[in-house]
Each structure stands twice: as structure tokens, then as C-alpha cells.
Amino acid sequence: MNRNLLELHDITAYRGKSLVFEGLSLAIPEGDSTVVLGPNGAGKTTLLKLISCDIYPVATKGSRLKILGRERWNVWELRSRFGIISHDLQHDYLQSAKGLNVILSGYYSSIDTWSYQKFCEGDIEKASLIMCKLGIESLAERSFGEMSVGQQRRFLLGRALINDPRALLLDEPTTGLDLKASFQYLDIVRSLIREGKTIILVTHHVHEIPPEIKRVVLIKNGRIFLDGEKTEVLTSSNLSTLFEIPLQVAVSNGFYQVFPG
Image 1 (tube, rainbow, N blue to C red):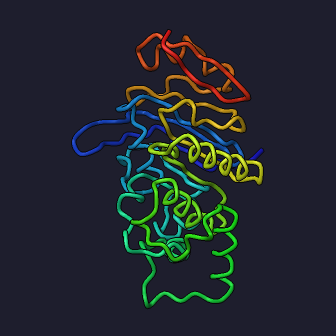
Image 2 (cartoon, rainbow, N blue to C red):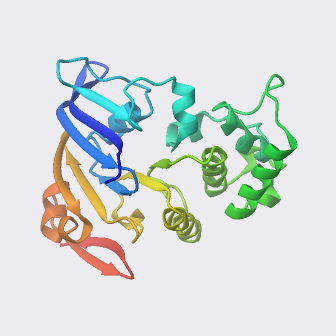
């Protein structure tokens, strides 16, 4: 049995003064790519921030938050082992950074590269190979601010991949992308799963879920609403209850979509 990539047990967490989670428990084994799906306000952003150590749970007897089997992490070490691509990172990234440097900055979990950071020829070669894999090699000298949203997202994915992380956490990866860019990005995610990366996808968009992800966790009002096999969880009845609106689920080529019920 694979060890847990992520383990939350009896977690209580606040955002500011607002209680988001109370008694939350969730385990995701390594190799078990999972989608966490829920409406706005369900607690998805708080979960992301807990995993990335941007916020910490309340210390209570018996509670624990383990990532890659450890409760204590140097944040920078964690971010090199667990690739996190969030909207906050995309928003905060320096607009003047050149494409190549965006990839290289992953070695230091920094925003752009800086003069004190050293990169050998092998580092630059690896970054170039990743850009080729993601189809962005022609943008190596383009500044981050001059890229499209989809191009920026690919570079941030490359930034995470430079450390060959065991897992990737993706925050609504196709938001803001047109159809072509969305499907191209999802194709990359699918290939990473097939290569053995564990993907945790946090979203409220059903159409973002790659066919290769089989487990779905539904969250609502800071609680686990359902957790199980995709075919059993993503039903019209369950999603209608989750989003509090009549919905009809359709499936095509392994992708799910919803329509008004």
C-alpha cells in the first residue's frame, strides 16, 4: 500500500476570524490522483493554503496535518518537493521575469531569479527540456507580463516540474483559458499522471477533471460531502445537492460535463 501523500486528521482551521474547517479528516495516498470539487465558499482555498503552509491549523489534541509523511517542514523545501500552481502565485509573479528564469526560479522557490542564485549548465539544459515538453520553448526570452494567461500557467507548471516533484497541486488550472488552451493544458496534466505524478486538482469546474483521475472528494460548507470513485460520486443527484441547483451530468470520452437539470 502506498503511503499517504497528504493526511489531515480532525483539522480545525480559520481564515481570519472565520471558522472554515472543524474536525476535517482527509487522506490522499501517493499515486491516488484526486479531485477536490466544491462550490465557492466550500473551503477549497483554505485547503490549498493549509497544504502549501500559507496558513496553519489550530493545534488541538489528536489533530495532525502530514504532507509526504511529515508534520514539520521548511516551507521552501516543501515547495520543491510538492509542486503547487495557484492563482495567487500567478498573480504575484514578477511581470518582468523572462520565461527561462520563471522555470529556473523553481530551484529556489523564488519569484524570478536573483544574482546570488547560481545555476549550472545542467540546470539550464533541464529548464530548456521542460520548456520543449510544454511547448513554450519559443517564449524563453519573453517577459511573464507579455504572455497570455495560458502561457503563464505553462511556465508556472514548468517551474514546479524543474524539481521533479512527486506530486502537483493544481488550483482550477483552466480558469481564464480559451478552449484550445484549456484542452492543451489538460493534455499535459493527463500525460503527467500517466508518467506517475500524483495530481491533486482543486476546482469547482467539472469539465477540468481528466479521465485519468478516478477519485473525487466533494466538499461543502467546510465538510466532506462525499468521497469515492468518480463514477459513483459525479452523478446528477449528488452534484445537484452539492451546488444547490438541478443539474444533469453527461459523460463523453471520459470527461464529465453538467447542464441545467
